[in-house]
Each structure stands twice: as structure tokens, then as C-alpha cells.
Length: 438
Image (cartoon, rainbow, N blue to C red; front, top):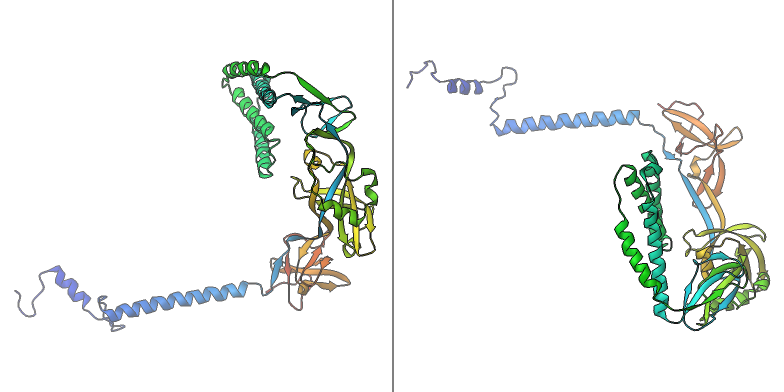
């Protein structure tokens, strides 16, 4: 208890009295438990943030360029004709010398001379299987023998050499997988493994392959006696040996391909032939081969006989093939037979026959811009570009234009021309070289 007007005896009372005091400047109660005061403070804070945001926006707009620009990036426009066609080669089939199972003696599409052995014919499928197993085992033995022959002193001491070759080998493996090219995948994996092992040995790590070799040598002995005699097949002339046939080998005379008519090409595309079982493969005796197709006269008018053109075959791992347009034979009814030639030859090309393709007519590469960006200054075509807050005029030539797209280009290495990543000004008046943008 305390008397009226007495002095407080507890500090809590002092705090309470202080909180109850009024400000002589605002006459607002400082008691923050008051809901009215809370709303007022929130309102003041919100207004402060809003004013600050508007101020920052206005400053940004003040410093921002009023000009609309577009970054100069390269784009390629191509015009193509899609066709269906047939591949004609100078080739002859190799008949089987006996009944049985054929085992090629050399890799597919290998170059051979007259008299070279290209295949063997075995009496039974099991004999042929044992021969194939024996080849695989011998390849593995050669691989491990190459590792066993490695010594520390014969290896590189620079680790960068191993890093580079391992990376290259890994890239080759992934590239083959991406292209679904499984023919070379085994060799690529073996090369990757060999470089990895070399790196291990170079760091002093012991690699013992003796047990692997003993197992493989036992398999070699087993398969070596697991097949009987075979009949060899030899090449009767020089060329490329291909271990498959498709029945089209002798349908059209290679020597008359340049005079083929649209009707003949269409007839070939409608045939579906089955090869006889008595063949063991074929010889391609000319490097040069033809691709025949038919196009409307309107497309043919955009081509020229004797020119080099790009023909893209989707079934190839490297689709684009440079070919010479050797002949253009019209039928008077709006159709033209085209005869392309190439001397590229490998395993994939040797398997081409009935193929869809795209013929590249034209290709244009440049910087795509709006029509509004094009200007003429002192008789020079070009565009204005923004460099910081300064306007520059860059000369440019029109590379391609249609109703929707305009491509412009510069001169590589020459000053004063439009360049990659320039900020091209799309619109604006009173522009001139050297103008400062406020």
C-alpha cells in the first residue's frame, strides 16, 4: 500500500508511467499495444517502401536507352528438295563355291586385289561359329599381350599425354554410341582401356594379365580344333569386298546410268528384290557410284549439270555427301531424272540402295534483323548499332530476304562492318554515327 501522491516503490511502476506519457510533439500514445498505432506504423512503412521503389524505377528509366535493339546472331537458311532414289554401283556378285555357312575372311568393305581370299565356306554352322569364336579370342590375346609388353621405362612420363588420349578415346566411344555405329565400338573401347592401363603402369601400378592370357590360350586351343575344312572364296578382280547382296546388283547397267529416264528410275523404286542364298558377297569394282532420283522440272530448273551439290542421306553417320550432278534427263512431261555421282566409299556407303535424301539447293548464313533496322548512309547499306551509350553506323550487305526473314552479313576481319553480337538498333529517328544516347 502507498499513500495518494506517494513515490512508487517498484521499477515496474516507473516503466508503466513512462509508457503512458504522451509525446509533446505528436500527442500520439507510444503504447505499441494500441491497434490504431500499429496500423499507422504499417502504413508509414508501406508508403516509404513504395516511394523508394518508384524512385528506383524512375532512375532506371532515366538511364535506360530509349532505343529498341536486337543482338546480331547468326542464322542459316537452307532450301532443299526431298527425294527418293536408288544407288547404282559397278558391282558383281560372288557365287558360293560350295553349300554351307559363309564366314568373311576380311572386314566388310575392305579393299582387295585380284586373287585375295575374301571368305570361307564351312560345311556346318557350328564349324563357322567356332571360327568366329577363335577370332574373338585371338583378338583378346593380342590385346593382353600388348599390355604385358609394356614396361615403366617405355611409357610417357607426361601425365597430360594420357589425359588427352583418354579424353579423345572416351569422346570416340560416346560419338559412336550417339551415332549408333556399333561396328567400330569394340575397337574404340579397347583403345580407351589400353590408354587407361598405360596410365596406371606409368604411375607405378602393377598390372598382371598372366591369368587372363592363360584362360584365353586354353580357349584358343579348344576352338582351334573345333571345325573342319573349308572352301576359300577369292576375288576375281580388284575392288571392295562387301559381304552382303540385296538383289539389285545387276538390275541396271552401271554403264548406262547417265542416260536413265524418269520412268526407269520410278520403276526401280517400285521393285523389291530378294537376293539368292548362293552368294557369298559382292565386289564393287569402281570407286565411283551414282544416286538416281526424279524431281519436278521446277526444282530441276534451280540446278545445273556439272555442279557440285550437297546430298544428305539420313542413314549415314555423316549424312552430307558432296556429289557431282552428272546428268539431268527430262521426259517432256514435267519430270527430270537426276544422276549424282561420288567416289566416297566405306562400309556405310557400300550398304546404300533404296534411299531417301535431301538435295541442298541454296544456303544462306547471316544476321537476322527486322526490315526497320536497314539504313542507307552516304550510299552504303547498313545498320546503326549501340555501343554503350554511343551510336555507330555499320555497313552490311543483304544476304537473303523473303516475306518473313531478312539476313544481313558483314565482311569478316574488315572494320566498319556489322559483327557478331552487335546490338542492332531496330528503330529510331535522328540517328547518326557518333551520336550519344542520353
